[in-house]
Length: 181
Image (cartoon, rainbow, N blue to C red; front, side, top):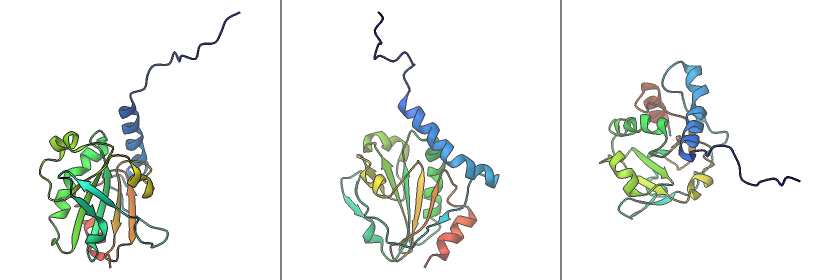
């Protein structure tokens, strides 16, 4: 009588490539529907306060979303191994430069990596890079794929959300940011 082995004969899956493929697919339908490299943000079903976001930056300083009340804040969840994240990342710096510091901020939340891993990729950005090493913040914000971006209005409410890559300095997105109360 033969016994069944508990070992799988299937090839091992490279976790990072698998997750990167899922990330790319998450944004693909919206991008195809637009026929261009970015899709608009979707309005949130209810205007509710944004979840807590308190994370450390590369210098081990605590950054709290609440300290940006009175400004529109773009919160971007990303990782260096995610191709759409890597593609859209430069546009975060470009859109940041289109606004005065007291009216708009970008918070880039890296998921699952450390400052040493991200430094060669991020370099000297004009906005804070925060680290969600245990993915608890990502879970609290109900992020389902990377990249995911939220626009927080001046009152600290989640106004818009988008999954998948974008060019944040696109005139349509810039106008949306300017229109938030």
